[in-house]
Image (cartoon, rainbow over all chains, first blue to last red; front, side):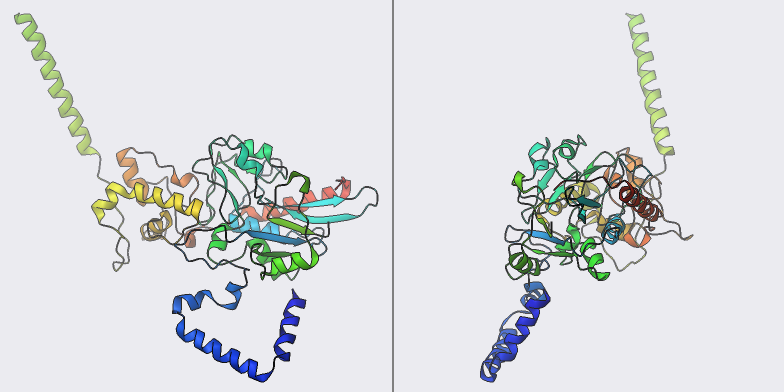
Amino acid sequence: MKNSTASKIKITEEMNSSRRDFLSKATVAGTITIAPGVLLHSTSAAASGNTSTKADNEEVSIKNRWGMLIDTARCATGCTDCVDACNEENGLVGHGRPETDTQYIRKVTLKEKSTGHELSLPLMCQHCETAPCVDVCPTGASFVRADGIALVDKHICIGCRYCMMACPYKARSFVHEDVEGQKLTAPRGKGTVESCTMCVTRVDNGGIPACVEACTAENHNAMIFGDLNNPNSDISISLKSHGGDQLRPDLKLNTGVRYQGL
Amino acid sequence: MTRFLRQFAVLVYALIGFTLLSTSALAETPFPTIHEPSDESKQCIHDEHEMRRNHMNYILHERDETMHEGIRGEPESLANCIDCHVEPNEQGEIAGIDSKEHFCNGCHQYASVQIDCFQCHADRPQKFIKRSSHTSSLRNQLQQTLAAHDASSEGVNQ
């Protein structure tokens, strides 16, 4: 990511003055002709594909595919900043029963038995394109939004938990207890299944998921969020240059969450 | 014949009696007081009578659009209702959904219509939601689990 920024600066420096003049004039002309609303949406951060630029009353579309990229080399063993941020963001509450307490993200340690090499990584809903949870849901409560975010519509969920069985990543949890003090942006209640929503309200409002925000804020920089369909987004650039693996690629689920350094 | 008439009269009296009883019982149930937002400059998005009759349709419509299509910022949202209508009282206490003082529950209890929204949704504006005290315990628990895992170091093959 840093490399790409550096190369862009270099190119800018190499540009001759007449070209630079032309560009600056063109930008001024563009600013005048473009309506204020459009201008708002063409800011550099928004156009980069790292966050959503959709208007409030606009439908999500297949033009975007939101994803996350996790660099396992930067993900420290024992660090739970992303999990803590997720719990806080979604108001997740523990009852002292780890087997059934809700978890959207969990830290998993992978160990290669032959070499003893260990990796630590956050594991959450992988936001599959062809999601097994959607296949098995008898009511249509499990669904993948047009922009690739897998969700549970708790208005329709009957709590049968087929999706929990079907998910190869064990990403879903069932709410066993009455819930009080829910967050405004994270409704959750007894008798329904839930999982990582990729902080869908934040994403729709042009933000990034809480876990990515926390990881970046703590300067670990192990997580990138962005639009997989936009070749200019940080996530696409990193995937193009360094690659990124899916967990269980043999299942051909085309996951939205990718890992580097597996 | 007279016997039949007498029986009929008794039946009529009984019916009138029941009606009187039930209306007097109804009169004793106090009409719910509806909380008006303290900020009088605020106005509801629709006429009062329209909202009373059709609020559920507005919310239902908005619910599906938001959930499945990601359309946000519609004025007809549950969060917007709550934002204006649920406020702390003079003592600074805020009524939860179980209380008759809650804007939604006041009428719903009166009309005996069960309301399911708040099994999942927040029953008060975000600024009045207390931070959960459990989150820190969840953190401790996670740390313990991780520590236990490191100790046993159960391997997973890739």
